[in-house]
Each structure stands twice: as C-alpha cells, then as structure tokens.
Image (cartoon, rainbow, N blue to C red):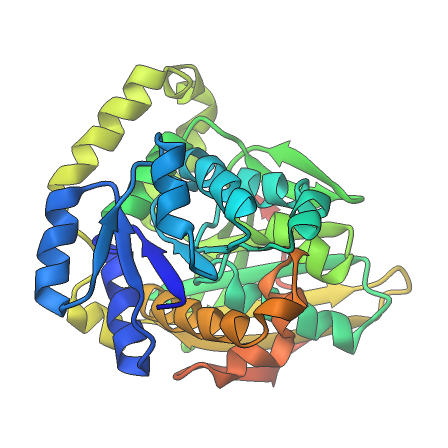
Length: 361
C-alpha cells in the first residue's frame, strides 16, 4: 500500500475510503482511536495502524515505507503541524482536505524546507479549494492581466459534518478575510452582500473567510481576492451580531463548550443529500483597464466532491511522486481543467461580466 489515510473513521474519511476502494487504490487505515480503527478494519478487511499526533515516534513508524499521507483529521490548524513534521522527517508527501487559511499560509511558508526534503505539501484537495482554485486559474488564463478576483459559491440541498462544524465553531472569534494588494486583511464577517441568480432564484451571498483568499493568490498571482457564499439564515443573523458578541467568542471555554455540543448532531449529510446536492461556483476577474471575465462551474454535493477530488489527487500524486515537491495548490499543480475530469463536475461556462451590486450588510 503506497498511501496512508489518517482519520479514516471520521465522516469524511469514510467517504474518501469508499471512493478509494471504488477506484481500486486501498490505503493503510490510520488514526488515533484504536477502537474505531479496529472496527473499520474488520468492516473493510484493510490493515490499520494506530498513531497519536502527540507521539512523533508513532507517526514516524506509521509513515515509514509509504509515499503519501492523506490527512483527514481536523481541525487542521491543530493537527497539521505534527503530521507535516513527520512527513518531512520520513520524506512522505502530504495532502489534506483543509479549508483553513492559517494552514494554507503556514504550509506556504514551508515551501523551501519541503523542497529540500523532496516532499510535496498539497493542502485543500476537497471542496475547499479544488473547484474554486480551478475556477480562479481558468479566469486568470482568460485574463492574464487580472488584478481583482471575486469568487462566489452556493450549495443547494447541503448539509455539514460534525468535524467541519466543530472547526467553524472553534474559529467563531476570527474576523472574515480578504486579500488586498497581496496581503490578507481582516474584515467584519458578512460585511458585504451580493444578490446573484442561482438557477431560477435570487440568492443573497455574504463575504466570508474562505480558503481561496489564501490559495488563489499562489495559484494566480492576483493580489486582490474576496469570496462570497450563500449561508443559512442563522449564520446571516450571526454576522449581524458578531461585533456585539465578539468578546464572548474570544473566550476559549465558550467556543470549546459549543464545539463539545456538536457531538450530539448527526455525523453529516445523509445519502439523499449527498446524491442530490449541488454546489454552484461563479467567478469574476477584472484588471486595471476595466476588462472583465466571468465563468461558472457546477459540482456534486460538497462531501461527495471532496471524496472524489481527494482520491483523484492521491492517484495523480502517486503517479508523479518523484517529479513534485514543495508547497502547491490544486490549481497550480494540476491545472484548471483537471477538475473537469471529476465525475459530476460541469464547466466552465461563461456568464455575464456585469457585476452584481455590492452592498454593506
């Protein structure tokens, strides 16, 4: 077995495992919970190995002899550093499914170190950021002089996993973010709103903290980037209250209490939601002269897309493992058209270059 799936028993980890078995590239199952791993191994007939992220020797033993690890155990800001350190020690390529800006930025800073070790650091091989990063790369190819990038995404019939929600809760105290003249700048969550058409409906989208604020810059070099997203009503209300409740959200014990409550929720979207859900992406790019381009992309439901993209990325990296090293983004390493090879992805289609009206929330 050439690769390790760490966090294989989690909600998203199981979906990735199912897809890997469907494609005929079984991994070594790994994680920190021996009981969950043993049960999954009995269910699938695959070997497993227990390794805590707090035990460097165990991680070294886990990775030794393998070429790649797909890290699927978040929150990645906490779990990424020990796993990447082990990958660099053992010369093993690192992939993950994070959407966390600090993780992307931290890995970008380790580019030179990873190159010295011949190790590829490829975060974000799931919904965040494979489709949107590809869309950004496509727009850049249409308008090489682009100085501004605006990405918009809307999920239809979507749900959320406990792991994703836990990560979001632990980051409630953080402002939103945009990239301005190459630098990441904090802004009020949901401080700007757009009305866009998705299918036959007009949807309100809010400016959010999304991974492309980091990754699209490395993929395209565009210095000004913002991301908008359809959000549930409760999240829109939270945006409006954020300034008032921010002092409370800064208290670690409050966020950890909320994160602990997440365990009582369903593990993630059910099979019907995964089968019928869709995610719509729209991207606008423009330059200093006023030239504009616009394109759209449509994908399967987010967790379904994550499983397909992550396994396809594993297959791609294993096929060219000796050729790549250092920090990469999906769009820069694999190119904009790679996403179109994933089952259920439709694009790139053109759209009106006229901008939706931007308003404050």
